[in-house]
Length: 291
Ligand SMILES: C[S@@+](CC[C@H](N)C(=O)[O-])C[C@H]1O[C@@H](n2cnc3c(N)ncnc32)[C@H](O)[C@@H]1O
Image (cartoon, rainbow, N blue to C red):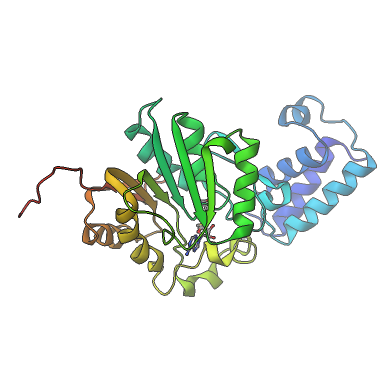
């Protein structure tokens, strides 16, 4: 008979042998999902038996994880900020590092302020929907080149009760958008240098959409396009924040400086790595410094 605790123990051993970084947590998450149990059940009722169906479901989950499929794909969900998102192989799994964008921008907008947000490369909807969930006066547009990603974002907006404040559009960055239209523009574009992708963990390399990862030769292709485009679609005085990869903050800052952004700051993530470049577009009525 398989019990919650024996299932957890056996799963840990198998995942460790498969080279998984976090076998203890992953095993627990898979047991919880397969046995419809909570973390507390595993501790308080460890000898509860799994049904044959639950046992079979767990076997399926473990063998997928042994092949390095991400937990978020197996469970089809991932927590981000304070919201739970549906995740499929069509979207990047939202990362905790990306929450740095929320830390950087939320203090700039008051609790009930009415404002417009644009999320370029919206993916699952993580950044946009987290902002809308925190700021009830905000309305947002998410753009993505992938129709399949937009379908996931649409489902997440509906699940979170945010569909009436969320518009989603298929497009190539801002090409279809009017200028001077948004109070806030956020983006977590693809930024992995193409040559580095083969060396990523199998969870990322083999399972995340390439269009969500590949930033071209030096990883900066998207920022070259986005810096001037973001400044074009922001209203005067509007705020932007973009996520950057390791070692990219100085180059991305320079691209936004060249595009005319002001008050540019680099914000570190919880691991103290430069993670977000933020700033604003010149407010109306401000004279050029050398003008
Ligand atoms: C790194 S993922 C970020 C997803 C999500 N915003 C997040 O932070 O979890 C980058 C996203 O940009 C989208 N993308 C790539 N090239 C694009 C383009 N030219 N125009 C619009 N979206 C694009 C990808 O489809 C992907 O969803």
